[in-house]
Image (cartoon, rainbow, N blue to C red):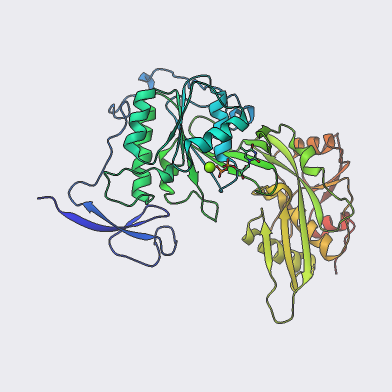
Length: 451
Ligand code: TYD
Ligand code: MG
């Protein structure tokens, strides 16, 4: 007789717990545990795709293989993927609703040189057709399927034998034979595993769309990220036209390369030179604006950081709101500004944002953020031809950043004439370099002397 057992599975990270709990002890999320019944003796496992279980092999006996990438026809997407899609690989693209995932993938289908199948669990074929017409994606080798059931998707793949499959989105596909709820972690994971097996067996690329949570992670199973070969995130401000695509995991190449697109009337258009677009609306005479020369992958990018400080009402703790900047980094920099440079930020609400919806993870952005905040507080606009670069330590000391030369060369190309950099940064023939050892010295160089 087969025994069943009840487990509680976290819908965020997929961890299993024997008892229900308010909080998942594995990932720390609240109210994410869902009751599930599974067979005690034989936990449901999908056999590994063929070619994966060949037993141990000596490394020097494995023949050299190169991954043939197939260009997607979209140069910014190729740039992120290191050349294109690899046959047999599975790529997951995550992003907020409305950011343009379906548009990008329909454009990918339009340019794909072979037969392609677009499976949508969210829209009808009429809706997809309407969008495809707008994007100029009508071609006889493009097949549409509006379907939520995994077995129907698998049989459609067998029938049409496409050379590319897009599933939009993986959270809307479920297997009716499985006893867990549609959209639950185990469903999504099992459907992904089945589609991975299909990709490997048929040696075709499969692209999955994944929804993201409000925190920006892929919704439901973080475990999905472990299963697939490549994870890309599509970012940007929905109310802005600029979109950023980056790979956060890539088994066939480097991660960190950035693809830039502009959403227009007829879909997404690649923006190989985004800097001109980023800076076009900049108003130089405003206090609180600083330009940071950052790098994404191999691509230098000029990002405007804006700060606004306003006196906080008495007896109410000051608010710190960061858009495009990690909240705890912002709090840390405010503390360093207060303690090491004497900038009295304590009784002010501080709002910080990056223009164009860029998310800053570059530690080299610290000094530009500090200068923007001080500039707002002192109502002192920074020179319009100045860029600011450097990591700030807890002692208020400035540290060097990577790719300084490339960043400064791009700043010079964009017409900036002066750069504030950490003391030991390499020099540049293209731009005047002002060196500072500490945060206080850097503020003084930009014409701001707090305290
Ligand atoms: P969509 O690709 O459906 O986003 P997602 O799949 O990530 O939810 O579309 C995003 C938005 O883009 C939608 O609000 C309409 C807009 N859009 C354009 O501005 N131009 C276009 O050519 C298309 C197809 C969409
Ligand atoms: Mg969509």
